[in-house]
Image (tube, rainbow, N blue to C red; front, top):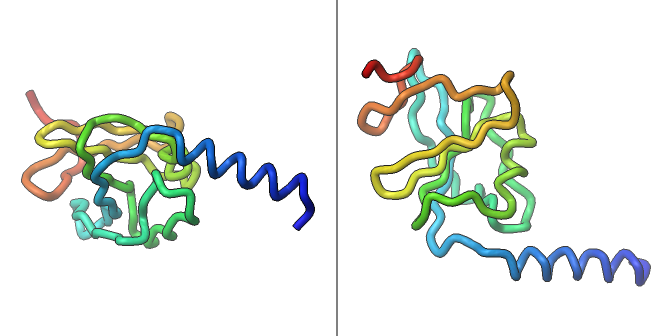
Length: 121
């Protein structure tokens, strides 16, 4: 590896290491099973970790992360680049990061599953 590339890689890793990171993060995929989405945990999916992301299963409609706080962190954009929304949960609150209008998360949560459409108010 040439010296300039090595310095760029080390700078990138140092910058990532100094960025705020979640203290707790459990992630996975929301996969289509019939007419609903169900969580499928994935120990290899950690957007906040600079390692290569896990590959989503073919039936994944979104990724999810359960965190200690309802914040977006460095690395979340990597999930969006996979073409999937990212559902972030903290306690009883939830937020969704979406890349663009063609990849919308049009589901609502009922228990531990997600049903199509928005929740009726």
